[in-house]
Image (tube, rainbow, N blue to C red):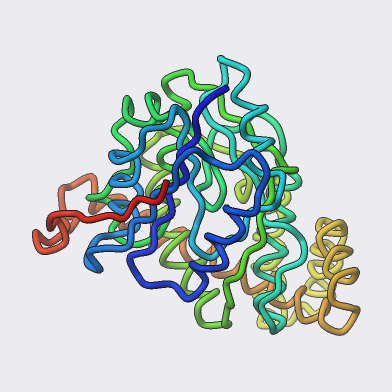
Length: 320
C-alpha cells in the first residue's frame, strides 16, 4: 500500500484551515503524514506546495486546499487508485452542496462541480483542490512553476500538461470529492475568471502549441461563449430575435447544469445562475485577446520576473 503525504498550503492564514484539518483527520484510511505550509507569508501558493513536496516522505502527495473538507472516503479512493502502478496522478471534484451563502457562491462552486463531474476519465490536466500525484513524477517535471505563477492561477493545469507530455497517465475520478468552503462575491468571481484563469490559460495554450478540449475548454463551453457573445451584440445591432435565439441556444446547450442549479437552489436563484453563467463566458471571451497579447510579450521576453523578496527562505510545519 502506498504511503500518502497530504500537503496543505496555508500561508495566508485561512480561517477554514481547522475545518480542513479536521476533515482530513476524520477520513478513513488517512495519510501517513500531513504537511501544512503556513509560512513565510511572502511565499506563494505554488512555492508552498513545492515546499510541502520537498518535506514529504510519502510515495504519493495529496494536495488539499485549505478551504476544502475532504469526504470520508477520499483517501480510500486515492489508495485504491494508486494500487495501479501505471497511474501517475488522480484528481477529483467539489461536491454539489457548497455551504457558503449567497447565489454567487452557490453558482461558482456548482459550476466547478458540474464541469468536473462531466469530465471523468483520462485527463491531460490536474487540479490541486483535491488531487494526488506520485512524488517521483512530480519532482521529475520540476514541480509547480513558481516563477510564472506567483499567485493562484493555472499552475495545476500547467503541471498536468507537463506530466501528460511525458506520457504520464492522469485520471479524473468524479467520486473523489470534497466540500468547498470558499465564499465568492461577484467581483471576486469575475476577477478570477479573467485575471487568474482566463488570461493565463490562454498563455498556457499558446506556449504548449496544442489545442485542448479539457474541462472548461470543452465544446459546450466554446459554443456557450459564442452564444453569449451573440446575445450581447445582437440587441445593439437591432436583432432582438437573434438575441432570443442565442439565449435559447445557451439554455439548450447547458440543460444539465441549469437543471442542477434548479435542484440545488430553486427556479428563481437558478435564473440568476443562468445570468452569472453568461457573465462567466463573456469574461472568458474578453480574456482571449488580453491573453494573446500577454503571451506575445512573454515570447518576446517581456514577462516580469518574480521579485527576489518573494524567493525568501521557506518554513513549514509538519504534523504526523
